[in-house]
Length: 405
Image (tube, rainbow, N blue to C red; front, side, top):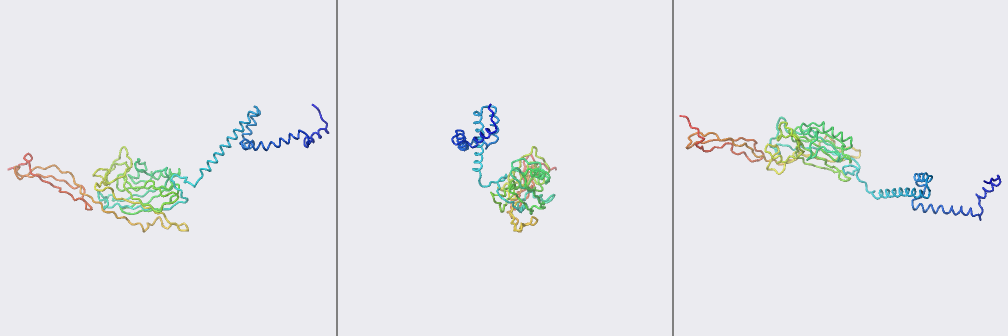
């Protein structure tokens, strides 16, 4: 190798940096500098510019040390281009799917703020509307405490056509709320339940109880239960009533209530003793003809449907500018007036005839025999009166009893 002295080295370095205008070396440098922006522009259009994807550039650089660069660079550029194209597709999809705000909860409610309601439960269980076997004592007709839960679609307090949960069975048979409240608290940990509310019981078949209910958009469904006392396992209730419509809260909702059978006790009457149903049946609505048995306390074959035994009125509270409610949850609104229903006619029910007694008197002529029956249910509210309770007929020879001389 040729060695240069200090003066030759400085002159050579100056020639390289400055270059001769006619030198072909400088021409090549200028041509290369001019080609770089054009090539980078074309690579940018193809999505293959290095430097925009550092991981791919590093991978390509490491591979180029082991293999031919002319074979590995296109694959590295291709990987970077594929990632960029995928990112562009995802961004376009997000922009295209963006639209008006939709509810992110399980109730379909898009309201922005919670709503406060006054819930009023009214009992209509009277001797006039339900005269058959109406409980007058031990204990008289009354209502248990009310249990209300706000929730979303992942929780059900009770459901018609489904088996009763242990909490529903305990409440429907005994009026105990421990199991129901425990299940609701567990569901609240999973954000399926919003709030739980209870009211005091009503000591008569006719009366009111009320409470304030605050409902959130994420749990706008309302369910409640009240036990019929006395009864085997009967209750009234509401299942998953949605208080929200789109982005607006309902102002007032009134629901007439009918009795339900929890399917865990086989008693027919209000005062039936404990008789567990095995296996347990599903929750069913009690109607005027179902269960189809004359001993059933709600069996009224002349009626197409039972009158409402209770009702629930849910009214949204107006809020003053200072945030206070217009109605207290401890004061029953004056607008709540007990509904009056027409009296339910109750027909008389009698037993079967007894067997014929022996004839008294001469068998050939003038002898009579008797049979009787008794009243099972006295008529009420202009129902069909009771028929004759005693009947007699002429004797026949083989049933005569001769008088002793």
